Length: 138
Image 1 (cartoon, rainbow, N blue to C red):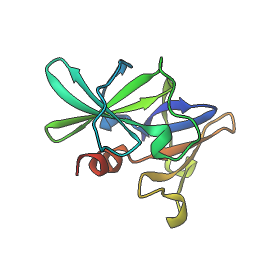
Image 2 (image 1 turned 90 degrees about the horizontal axis):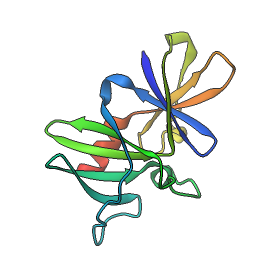
Image 3 (image 1 turned 135 degrees about the vertical axis):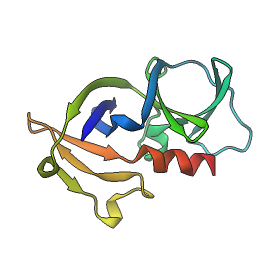
Image 4 (image 1 turned 180 degrees about the vertical axis):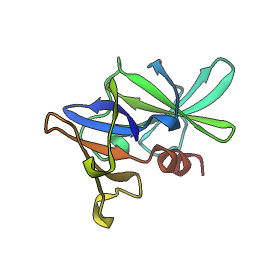
């Protein structure tokens, strides 16, 4: 499995690279009244309206994503969802024996797939960004 690695603070996260359409620099979203706290708002990406979520707030981390980070664009059918992260780092391949499945209490509403072990003994939290996008759009 090829994994896009990105950071929120000092924690490394990853998602299947096949789910990522593109990565763009952050821009100021238009806030939606009544939206959940983790929904930053909407942006216009080349004529397409995109809902943007703050991954740090969705995962209940203390601080939101930094303002000069990136948006990871996820395609769900004909819709796009942007995920705000601090830093996009690398693309790595992980084998099955380097991935440990998440237990039910670790999934954070179904968005955490498991943990991956990087060669330098660092751990990466593997996210199911499709489930994350569905939760925002439905």
